[in-house]
Length: 272
Image (cartoon, rainbow, N blue to C red):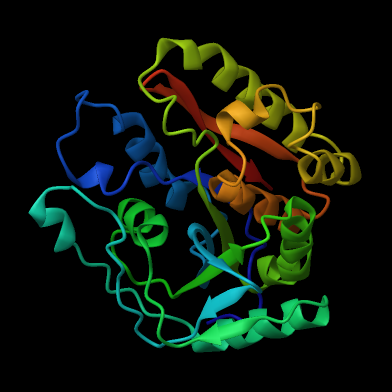
């Protein structure tokens, strides 16, 4: 392995609905474009990442929690799907060394991170990675978000982790740009979801200070339809974006994928 690594971007990706990429879906083809975009990620990177640090919206902790096992298992934390979706595998290695490195960076920024050798990877991690990196040969570190759902704290978490980009680590926030479960399939959701998605696209493209300030204040009136897209106490699928943005530093962001799925806009964002 070379002593130097190309700086990796940071990403915010939509991880879909449960194991949607590995089953027939109703309506048919709903997630096909999202799956195709996920498969395009490796070719878009400057070089294969040495490791992936993925922040999942499906794991909350009082402080940041980090999987530290050498071979984490999988958590099939979805219900009511076909039996074969509970037999999926993703045998990528964990990365205890990266867990220690991330622990140190977060502790240095005033957090009290926890190494968790028991927790497995939830579907916010293994489902999109199985699509994007099907060879399962890149070490993966899964990180939780904060139970407080403090938007500004998640930006600061990302800022603490920013040095990892220059160490060949791909930092990925895994969630959904829209996550109001009552809105899916309702034509009335199209306009407000598009308004919030456009606000996110505008926000991530701003200079670092303005971008981070707007993200920290997203739930206020400045974000149109924000609380329709992410109801109160349900914003866990948005906050991985804040970590990705914080880790981006001065790198400007852009919306790199969008699709209308079941009447709502679903997007991905990248910071180079």
